[in-house]
Image (cartoon, rainbow, N blue to C red; front, side, top):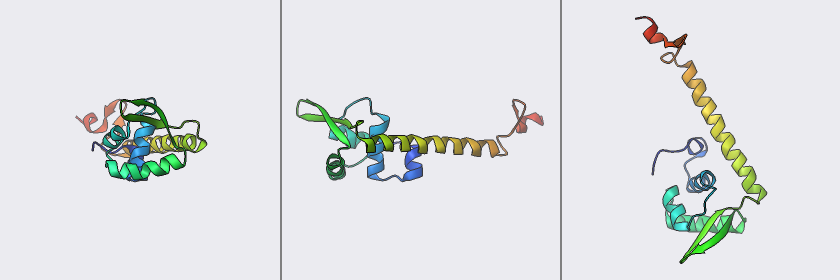
Length: 122
């Protein structure tokens, strides 16, 4: 799997969170379960068990069938999904602000005018 997202760093790198993260970030397209498992870094068997919960709670919706593959995306009409998307982006925004504040407070990154303080002494 690639680098963890800010959401996963803050809320935990669990299979459910990885699926949520993938489906939210890529919500404009529909995907097969196989692709969701691969792109989110979750095992297919694990995704199948999560999928039962997602389906039971009407969190996902089947969009179409391509060959044998059923294509899914988040059910944006579900209020729980809408609230979770808002929560997801709030966590990401908070993490970005927190990282920026840490950078501003770092003595190695402080600056005098537009010249880094370290270089200003030379």
